[in-house]
Image (cartoon, rainbow, N blue to C red; front, side, top):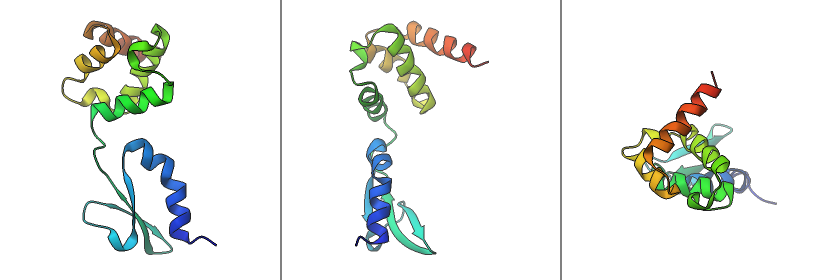
Length: 122
């Protein structure tokens, strides 16, 4: 039989992997870790490691879409921009230019994709 901590670690694994974090045992939780409690006691910790980087966000979207950004067709590039925007990528410094470079399009194209996306949701 698995312990509650093992079950929680297994349940959180897809999220932890997607954001580039790590699960730590309750006895290894440090300041800055996110403590997951079960029945009022620390069960596991989530250690945030290199999460807020544009490279990580791009890698996650590429994995989700199954191809490098530069290899996507126009519709999938627009979808990728929407996913990146939903995840806050464009709040990072120089992200428009860097995403455009990763896609092989201009920053104006990225602005156009964002504009069209925001108009469609109004």
